[in-house]
Every structure is written in structure tokens, then in C-alpha cells.
Amino acid sequence: MQTRTKRISGSLGSPPARSGPGTCDVCRGPALVGLKRCWCCSETLRNLAARAAADGRSTWSAPPVVMPLAVFRAGDSLHRVLRGYKDATAVEARRYFTSKLSEHLGSVIEAHLDCVEASLGHSAQSLAVVPSASRLFRSGPAAVPIRSLEPVVDQVDPLSKLVRVQVILDRAAPPIGHLRHSPSAFEVPPVEKAVASGIRRVLLVEDTWVSGATALSAAAALTYAGFEVMAVVVLGRLVDVNASAISRKWWDESVDHVNPPNLRQCSLPKCIAVGVSV
Image 1 (spheres, rainbow, N blue to C red):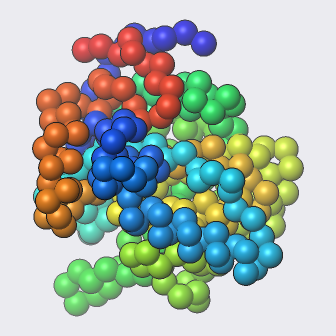
Image 2 (cartoon, rainbow, N blue to C red; image 1 turned 90 degrees about the vertical axis):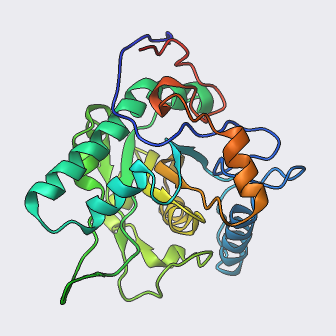
């Protein structure tokens, strides 16, 4: 595997912070100095482990590697594009926001997909997209479904070549919310479970990480179905800088506010894309 040098553009947000004091080792968001994990990730993983034990199942000896492509605040460019993609009703607007998210995802993935293999020892064989856990959003007098990331992923060449594994949201299950995990809210159809016998290693793609409850619940459902979740690729990790002085300080001191995410080291343990250049 060789370090690559390439000219790429199109990423949004700020580069995620790498592991270190004050940065969560799961989501790469702010954490109390002296603790390796933020409160949200600690609680979600603890609750998932307790639920798995109660069901007589096992999840992970260590949580899946989370690869946020960027960090952002409410109102930042990535936040506006994500909201536009989910909320837009006009066809041209949907195409525009799909294109912007595909550029963002593609620009970072093209630079850093090999970092997954370098960090974890294996390349991914398949890909799954976390279905939206939100039922409906209100637009004028009508409620319409929030869109899946499938059209965005389909436009990213390295990801479109991976075998697609379907994960379905069970609309009858209790909704997932902030810190409200539920692996049972997601279903992996029997035909997909059969795929796991030969194609086990999967990348899971999620649009936004807030507490991680949705992405980690989907990852648990895939694990129960026999898949090995190599990494959870997240388009953006939302940081509420007004939540605490710690979050504000972390944002000001730990985040690179100058360079775009695709031109910096990624959050994986072994980033080999050091040759990425403008």
C-alpha cells in the first residue's frame, strides 16, 4: 500500500480532531480531560452492552471505529447542506444538495479509504447505509419522509463498487432518540444475513453523529446478523459549542479552522494519506 498524492476538493466542515486529551476516542468530539470517552458515547455503549447481555447476545469487545469526515456546528455550511438535503421538496434543490454531499463524501473517502485497511488490517467488502430514524418532517401542510443517504453514496465511486447490504428501519419499533438506543429498531433481512457468510466486513455510513445512538444501534443490528462492522463513516459530527465551556474550549483549541477535511489527516489510528496536497 503506497501513500497517495492527489488534488481533491469539495469537503465541508472542519477536520475532526485526532485522539488525545479532551477528545473522545469513539466519536472524536469533546470529552472531559482525563476521560477517554465523552458522556454520550459512554452511556450509549454501556446501555447497548446491557441490552445485549439481557438478550443473551454479545456486541463488541471494543466499539466499532468511528470515522467522522468532519466536525461542524449548527448553522455551519455542512449543517445547512445536510438540512437542505433532508428538507428540500423541489427536485432541483434535492439534486443540488445531493451533489454537494456526494462531493463532500467522495473527496474525503478518495483520500482516506485506504486508511481503513491500514488501521484495521483488512479492507471493507460491503457497505450499508443507516436508514433515517426520523419518521417524518413537517413541510407546510404535508408531512413527507426524510431522505436516505443512498443517492449520495451511489455517486461516490469507491463506495458504489462495494456490495450493498440493506438495513431496514422497523417503523413499528419505538423511535430512537438522543441516548435512546434500540438495535431492534433496525432489521437486516434474511437474504442479507446469508451474504454475511461470505462477505462479512462492512462499512456503515451515517449522515450525522450527535449522540451516536442511531449509528451504534444499526451497527449492533449488523453485528447480530453476522457482519463485522469495520468502521462507521459519518459525514459530520455535530458539536454543540454552547453546551458547555468545555465544548467551546475544545472547538476553539482542538479543531483546525483553516484547512478542509480532505486535506488533513483523518481520525483513524493510521492515516496514510499524508501525501494529500492542493
